[in-house]
Image (cartoon, rainbow, N blue to C red; front, side, top):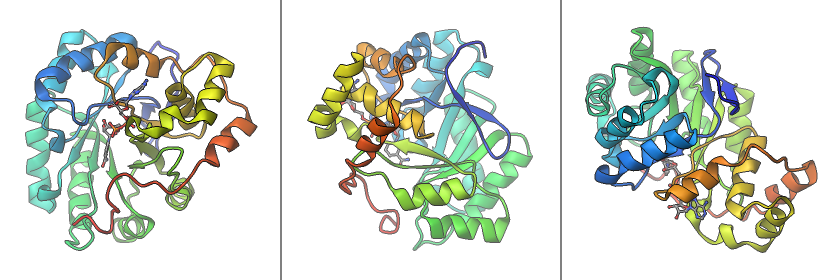
Length: 276
Ligand code: NAD
């Protein structure tokens, strides 16, 4: 690892690039181009999921890029239909096969599905995969504090990451505070608010103008300075490049707080307690 991008250290001592490339809704036939472009630009972390149905193309893009497997931090996620101990082990093998790799850097439970109540059993399968050396780190996504509390109480093993919806107008303070207290890294999904109104908000555009940066770059810089892992998505080479060009400026404390204050409670995805 010779580049200068920031890396975070997990509670299991593994390290991960703070900025990664997300590939939700990028079709399997075009995702390999996007992944190869991202790796060429300098990203060293890719976030996919079984649910995105593009793991095969992600693996192809990684191989095509010529960047060694050992230099890429690869995340995928276990989908909802695969909760349960045996089902989780099987889903893991299926993802590895599609990706064309023999290990993962990070495996996440995509949603807790509390009414089905199998996430502790599923978590035990991930613990097993990690102790077998098949995956370096294990984590969760969309877990609320009470779900995390149960994992801690019933297995004693804390996730390294909780990947949650997080953007300036939905900052999830309580979940982030719980993560921080338990040394769980907060990873922001839809970090740009899915490219909606946030990117034209006057405050963010004006702030960007001070640094010759776009609103998207200001938002991503805010995530980095707030300590989140962050995984913006784009299919377009110029935006993939733009979203990586965030390591040559610093927002002041006042500017960070002004962005914190944009929180309007705008959740875009489902509430984790309600998705079952
Ligand atoms: P995002 O916030 O990254 O927004 C992506 C959209 O923003 C793009 O489609 C494009 O329209 C726009 N955009 C990107 N860069 C831009 C730029 N520089 N200028 C202008 N517009 C730009 O939204 P996302 O894709 O939903 O989230 C990112 C990643 O998070 C996903 O790809 C996926 O990997 C992950 N994710 C995880 C979950 C989960 O449940 N764990 C859910 C959703 C997304």
